[in-house]
Length: 291
Image 1 (cartoon, rainbow, N blue to C red):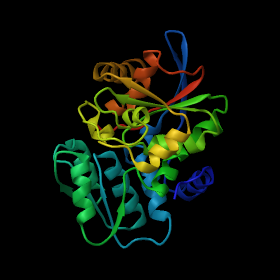
Image 2 (image 1 turned 90 degrees about the vertical axis):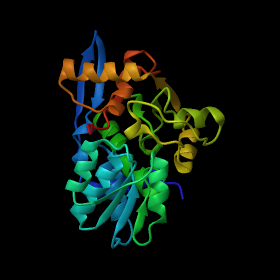
Image 3 (image 1 turned 120 degrees about the horizontal axis):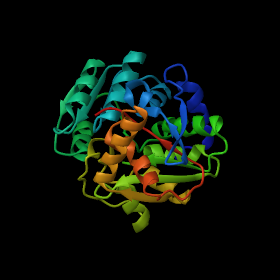
């Protein structure tokens, strides 16, 4: 069942005691006004805490939760599960960044390394017996929880005409589309890590290769079916950036503003710097800081 704007509003109330309401930062670059949502300051280091918390608080509390992640979702689930007293097991690819793996274990979750990609880790997690499986992006409660980022943006800055997010499997983008009240949703992906762009171009979910400096966060090989339906209906604008542009944008955020984010979170800023955002007053989401 597809979530609705009302589900995002309900999620905002549900997760409020557990997540931070992250600030907006208004500034300018080369005379151009810029508005940033500092979601990298969220508990667990990314927006993923929102969707994980909403999913765990929806319905009957599970005795145990199992998930798969490139890193950030696992951190969100591990952190949310620890706050709620739910044991968690997180499957990750062998190449998961060590900093993310350490933090997942430090949060109290059991870490299992499996396979070369997120898809392989997810297949192993799904095969595990016992516990509720929590999908990283293709689950209504997760999507609704991620939408609370954008709900905060439009509440705090109603003049925003577009919200720009990095996209992997599409969960954040799908939730954003539900929360922005007819404003434009722009997704930004690496050139060689483009599950959302490929699906919107092809007219349906397709498998893609994954090769990017941002792959640990944006490395979905296929958009979620739920995310595709919502983004296709929302007339989403998919934008691509190169790895070089992502790294330059990340470095500029640090050098100019002392904002330290992971490569994936710099993708919207990279697109903005390259004048690829079709909006006059967009808000760019800096979605994570877990290198």
